[in-house]
Length: 195
Image (cartoon, rainbow, N blue to C red):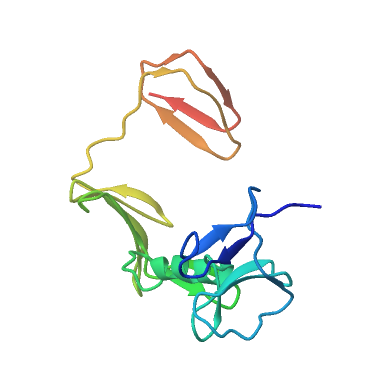
């Protein structure tokens, strides 16, 4: 049979006023109840065997010692919901204990910290394009007809040594400006033009 460290309250004028030990075991035995008893005094403590929880009576109700799963979910949910988020809507669903993250429908912009380099999707009655800005200047626009480089874009360039191994698929073409040194392997199933 297990032994427990039992506590009792001593009388005033006894060895100690307050808690005293009956034995020298390393555990404390709490009163065990299969349901919460009728509490009478604030500070009463029990072990509820049906719920597997330690509870303390606060003067009006039995409270679980420590946070419940629901309380933890509410704490974490509050850290998300209502905060200022950019491009995303965050909602804590208390009914199922989950946090929903939804990218805003108007999140049509990818940008760096100071907003001068970005990729922006434009949708309107006359446009359905992706615009590329670098250092605050538009350098290219892409739509269904292709990619158009602006007067501020500079040029398209590549390294004249091609070390990669890749395949040009059938129906696709590639242009390279020579002289070109190929140290990798290019499998040409389409069209390759070296100028």
